[in-house]
Image (cartoon, rainbow, N blue to C red; front, side):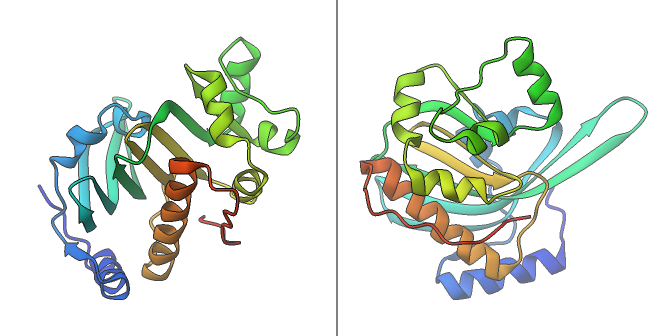
Length: 211
C-alpha cells in the first residue's frame, strides 16, 4: 500500500517540473520485478517504490528516479530504510553483473576472510574505501578503470552502484534526496550511463556529495 509522505511528494513534484519528467506519486510496484536481481532489492520486506519520476526516450531505454523503502526485522525490533534510487534501462549497455559499495568495517572483515574485492593498484584510496564485486573481473576492471570515475567515487561517502546487462542503479544507502539533488543525481546517472555505454574518454562528473 502506498504510504503518503507529503514532504517527499513535494520534493519529487518539484524535481519533475525541473526535469520535465512524468511524476508518479504512487510509484510502480511492478518495477521491483525488474530490479529483483540487484542486491539492494534482496534485503528486507515491505518493499515500496514510491514516489517516482519517469522519462521514456524510446522503447530501447527509459530512466526512473524513485524512493525505495524497505524494512529489516530482527524479531524483537525492526528498522526501515529509505533511499533515492536512479534506475536506467538501456540497450546501449552491455554490463557485467557488478556491485560497488562503500567498504564498511564488516565488509573489510569479510574480505580479510576471503570475500571478493576487486582492487586497483593505481587507485589505492578507491580500493580501500570501496568494495567492488562481480564474476567477470576483467570486464569489470575495464569499465571502472578511468581516473574521472575513480575521482567521483572517492569523494562520495555513501553512494553505491549496481549493474547487469542493460540495467544499472545508483543510490546512497538510507539517504532520501531533496528536489535539487534529485536533479543533480539524474545528471550523474546520465553521465555514468554514457560512459558505461561507450567508454567515452571525456567524462566529467560534478563535485557533489550525496549524504
